[in-house]
Image (cartoon, rainbow, N blue to C red; front, side, top):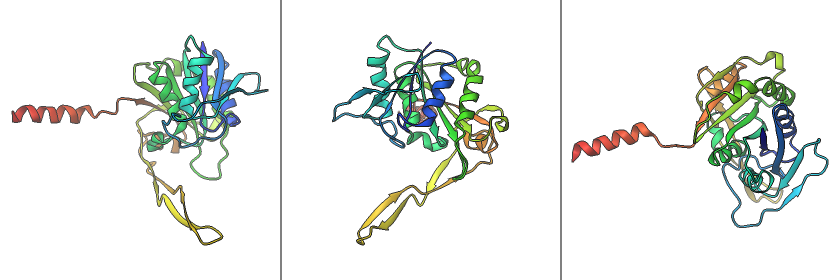
Amino acid sequence: MRILITNDDGIHGPGLRALALAAAEIGDVKIVAPERERSACGHAMTMREPLRVHRAGSWHDFEAHEVNGLPVDCVNVGLTEIWPDGCDLVLSGINNGPNLGFDITYSGTVAGAMEGCINGIRSFSFSMAMLDGHTPPHFETGTAWIARHWETLLALPHEPLLFWNVNIPARPLEEVGEPRFCRMGERVYKDRVERRSDPWGRPYWWQGGIVVMDPSDPTTDVGTVAQGGVSLTPISLDWTRHDVLDRVRGGATSRT
């Protein structure tokens, strides 16, 4: 099996090696990742400057390349230059932090899987979900869990416009609960932009905010991870609300 791996934490992100170790259990791994951290870049791509690609030296016995771009760029470079005859699997991660609920719209990690999906390849994004600022990421748990569950993961539906977003709770492996198939929850940021002043009194703004989420619903990715389980969420690239579309089309028909 030919496997392309990327991330948004950059070529030196420890989660990248953790995912490569898990993927090496099932196939031939090649890595194309940003040369530096590109978190929260979403599904952006580089259009107005050249992409530079360099072989990453001494990269844990894997063939690895770094790109001065974004995760989407890395996937497209990988499919053009590294796997020119195509590959069987695109994996993105393991992200250093959760990608739950609305996070997926900002996440460069999720965007890597999204780009694989756009190219018609079975794709997954993986994240270690730390829900407080004190928990270590436990990437070793991510490696072990993914390696142990390849049979389940590869048996999941693979359809056009569909990829899977997986969040693994950041805790020792023996404390990780069962995987659950679940929908996106809500994870939003309150007081997102904070005004500050530099040492000369000039104003600037820092974006981040306080995470607000409801972990009470076990049918969501947020609730699943909060209860210690692994969330597996099917994500569709078709953002159309078909129920609304059918409803307004029906209304338009009835008025004619």
